[in-house]
Image (cartoon, rainbow, N blue to C red; front, side, top):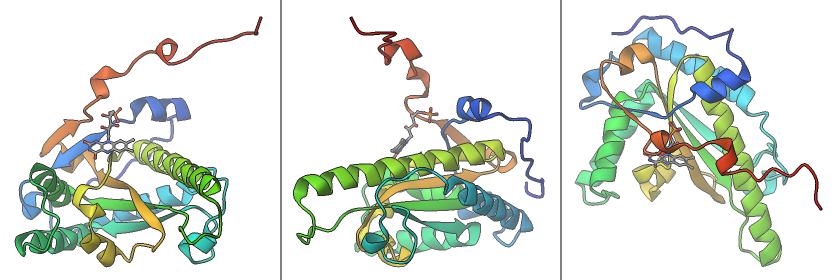
Length: 236
Ligand SMILES: Cc1cc2nc3c(=O)[nH]c(=O)nc-3n(C[C@H](O)[C@H](O)[C@H](O)COP(=O)(O)O)c2cc1C
């Protein structure tokens, strides 16, 4: 199943990448549904995702967040990049939490998350800054900053999706389900003043196409530009 090289689609324009991006939820029944995590294929996927993040990080942001998130980076996001090996361990950890009755088991959603982790070849968890409520800024400023931290993080996540599409890697932006839990946050060492904005699942087509691949729920409901744009050449 593994061993294919990853082809970067150099001929792809930005427009192509935007149009070809689509959510692909790749679900595995068992951790062994794809090759052993030690397969070098997963190192290649990991390297491609790393390269994607390096480029995606040029997304725009307005308010610096190093004071909020810690560290020196001013960007209002932080992410954790997880290799296939880590996805398997994360699956085991979350499953153990759920079985202990200690976990955030929430029925079908948790089930789906386990299936995604079974199949994931890499995973990026993206955390957005949330301004603390310690009274250093007033509430309206805080709300404005939080909105802009989240918007900037959304732009960063979309850059990741486009970069992965260009690299011919399947991708899916999930809200995270059980990965929003305290147990997952502890494992990830989530920054204190942050919230999980996205869990981006990454798969290569040659593995994914042998598993169950589901589209985004709203894929078939996309509308035309004119339906969400008011065009004004000039005002009367
Ligand atoms: C902020 C955000 C959170 C999302 N969370 C989920 C999710 O938790 N579960 C899910 O099935 N899809 C999730 N999606 C994917 C959307 O369902 C998907 O983008 C939509 O159905 C359109 O499909 P497309 O991405 O193929 O165009 C999320 C998308 C965004 C932007």
